[in-house]
Image (cartoon, rainbow, N blue to C red; front, side, top):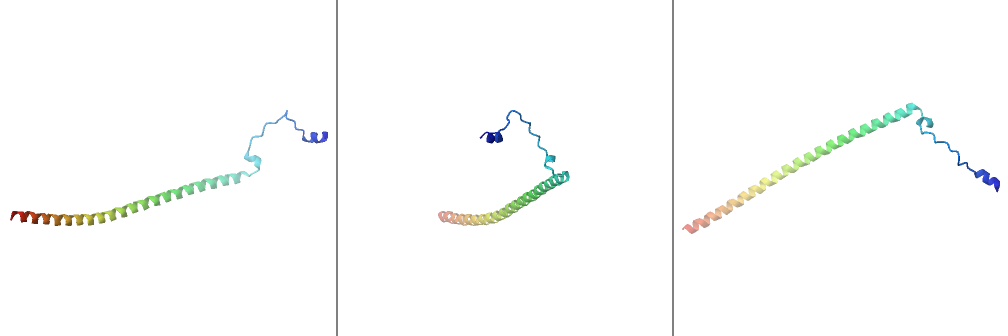
Length: 104
């Protein structure tokens, strides 16, 4: 049993400070790291540009829809106005007949 304890024995009194982390410790060549960094920056900039293009297209689409909506409203409003004017003309005509009928 004593041998088993010696195998598990750990010296807790002396501890070495952990070595600082470094990319060089991984053994990755510096040109590969630089290439990956450059590609990442390029992709981020490209995605940002695409996002700006999409935002522009969305704004243009909204403007077109608003313009179509305005044209449709104007057409409908003109038709309603013409109907109201015709109705008012009929009412005036009826009132004039009633007033003329009373005068006689």
